[in-house]
Amino acid sequence: MLVMNNELSKGILMKKTILTLSTIILLVLAFGAYSFSHIVRSAFIDFLDFNKIDGNIYLSETLPEQANQKITQLIENARTRITEYYGKPEAQPIIIVIGTEQEAKNYRLYDTPGTLYFTPWQNYLVLSYKNMNIDVISHELVHAEIVHRLGYFTRQQEIPTWFDEGAALQVDLRPNYTKITQISQDEFQRVITLDSPDKFWSSDKAQNIKNYQSSKVVVTQFFQEHPSLSLYAMLQMINDGKTFKQIINEEKS
Image 1 (cartoon, one colour):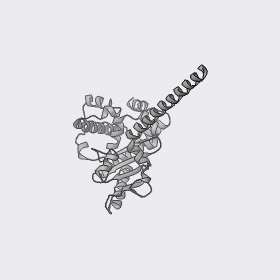
Image 2 (cartoon, rainbow, N blue to C red):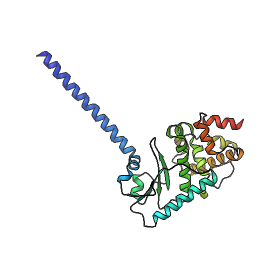
Image 3 (cartoon, rainbow, N blue to C red):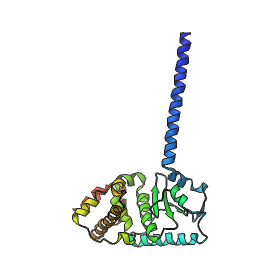
Image 4 (tube, rainbow, N blue to C red):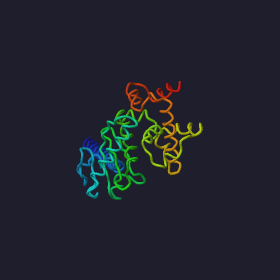
């Protein structure tokens, strides 16, 4: 009888352990699905209320009839601008154009007209139909180009946020970001410490704009001082084994 009771106790303990682990796993999955719901929605865009055009462009069903032509023309113009400045882009992110406030919440597009979400399997460019323009699209497509040419993990490890944003701002002509053309040495040193998203962005919008402005100046000056070194060439050098810091330091010497 004692043996049977011990076996019964072990069985009950095992069931409780399995139940506890299952509950923890389900909670983790539920939290992950909630935290990354915008990525999940992007990944399953084919099954949502969006109309697919031109292979990789998805338009909200709430958009007007003329949206198709307007959006494709803006994207074409943005790619042309990038070609003229950097060379022909290769990236083909999934482009999702939203039309309502609820869709903006669903894709976490709050105080910005566009953003790029990049993952190990695909890159997603989410745009607000109401607020998008050639500057926004050009800016985000440069982000897409960098991660496309490097891959997700190399992009994460090698490219500091100040450079990623400064490079994108070269084709972004919005007045907020073009007011400053020179910065002090102290400001230069401050900017190059903004190597991660949590350092670059804060709740202070004015400071964020200043970070954008200064990062644009730093990258502009870098390419002006090194005309033989293009963005695409730098990315290829990283793919070939050099680190971003090695490339920058070599150019300084």
